[in-house]
Length: 324
Image 1 (cartoon, rainbow, N blue to C red):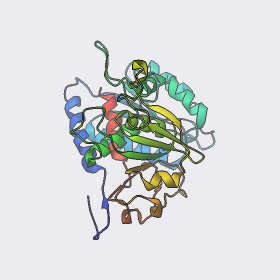
Image 2 (image 1 turned 60 degrees about the vertical axis):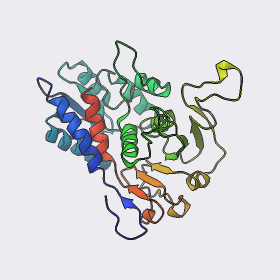
Image 3 (image 1 turned 45 degrees about the horizontal axis):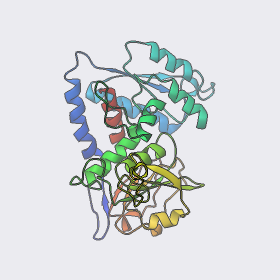
């Protein structure tokens, strides 16, 4: 963590947050008779995916997790199309009893085709938390497992963002569990099923007021503000309690959202996209999730804290899911 000049916000690296979970994972691995095997499936020639695969291997090697990278399609042979053979590779890993976890490097095809692939991965081997069973649990706030069941896997990148916000004090530990982000307004710029929507749900479930943004539109995802689980003025008992967040359209512009957001998380996979520093609320927290920097170079002139990457924390969440 560093502050280079007076009045400039803190530049926070992911290392100290990741290291805390590294210790937890090592302790879990020490109780196992043999290391778990994680299979990564790379089916694209995209540089961010290739980098993520290499980074995953490096972290697994350091912790003693067996990592096997299976290259298919354009990743195996540049003469092949992106995604060739990826479905077959997933099915093969599902059926291999020696494989304990599967991750796929997205995006491959984009949109509905990628969503289809996410549902092919066995929920018993999904370490990314992208299977519909896990999304259903998340969106319905089934975070407390019934007796005789295990806790649901959460998507690793959104979970990494939450852990970063807990570390820097955005979450108030004096408040009850499920309310610790109460009073905070967050803008999440990304509405994919991998990052943006599950992150908005996680934050709203924890009490924040969340604006979920993509390039074309904005939705307000509010848990403890307009729609909340506290008693409403209505005397109808059935309408006084909402056990999960509620999503509704917002008429606010992105500029208006940024002006009063305590936290801005951006995950736009576009090198040219930048959140303008001039639009930020003084003292806000900015977290960049995208492979490319989504914030302008002078972001710390307005932000009290800026995290340029959370990749190391994301990998720890993935390996934590593997060790569950």
